[in-house]
Length: 236
Image 1: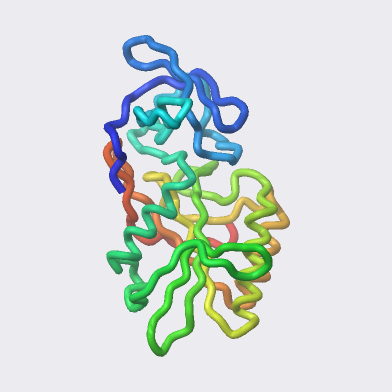
Image 2: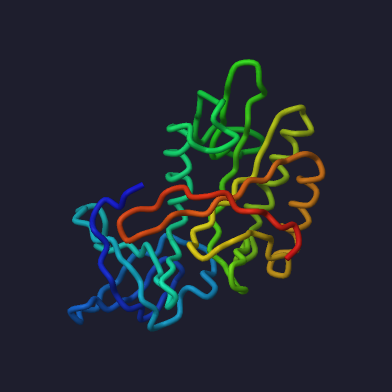
């Protein structure tokens, strides 16, 4: 998934009201950018951080910049736009390049299921059960190499786990797909101390047969694509 316009480097001044961020461009201009991330962004919103913004000239958008990346001192990147994982995974599913999912020729996004829910992707193929896939964006890391989900309490995420468990209980196939938007991650786990209810729902869903898959993104200031698979550690 290539960015629509070339990203511009900037320095973060502050992030506030969840969806707003003030930043300083290289020429000294101070701007306000849209932050497409409702989570806490723990460890990613420190004033003075080097970030990358995507400019736009869309007259329908009030803000002319979108915050896309954080660049770390070690040269690694973290993607902060929570819409990216679905778009990156959709491209990989359409190209049938996701290991273990290549034999599903049909993919439908945002299909209604459960109780007022929509599954991110529903995969179908002849002579196999439909596969319900829920995608989560992972950006938190409190230990080197270890990515964690979630970075804040997520009642919606817990609901998704319950819905997927019902799919499996009904004889279907369901999967949690954790897409890690960090180039420095080597494995993924749950941040059970941040959201014990989510961790409990995950344990129940996993025991019922809900599958887990995790991949890291390949991130540059030009594009974000699906990268290699990562091991999922049930306990850190």
